[in-house]
Length: 224
Ligand code: SAH
Image 1: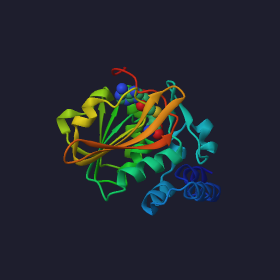
Image 2: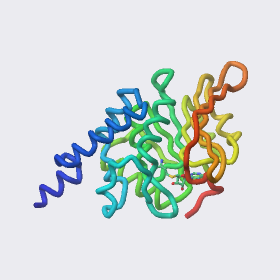
Image 3: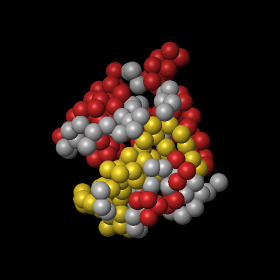
């Protein structure tokens, strides 16, 4: 029984494998085309990033509550945003704003060289850290702080991904983009939110609007 539990926890159980495969199929039907991204999502145990009471829903394509009024992002959004970041080729340094459960962090860490992840809620960050260690994903460093400020000491970044909706594009994040660097960020408020891809060009920034999205807000300041 113990052994069985262990297997299920790790997601090697048959049911889990089937439901994961169904999710991957759905994501590709929805237009996610990057096979590396799909492979990483296939092998990342999302059920370890939610409360046990919700783990039976972990492979549905939906956001789920993780406490503190926050949610684990919808797998489609995680896939789409990762794909947008990687569209122009592999990335070395990526900063993530809004660690939350650590699920997007775990996916990113398997797609890029190094991830720098900023979260304002300490307890969420601590739990996310534990999960990544448990999964042996070691190329991630965490900062407890305010995502509006980014992580200037380690800038510049080749990619920045923000997993909460900002009222405006934070200037600090633009400043911390390397030449050619890519920022994927939801901007807006309430029901009116758009996903943007901003690229640091030789002179200034280009900006692509990628459609409506739904995220929790990017708030102010760190929280103990
Ligand atoms: N990618 C996460 C999504 C978490 S929801 C996941 O899949 O689990 C958004 C997260 O952004 C929350 O954890 C929230 O606390 C965090 N957040 C909100 N405002 C922030 C800010 N100013 N700085 C850092 N993190 C912030």
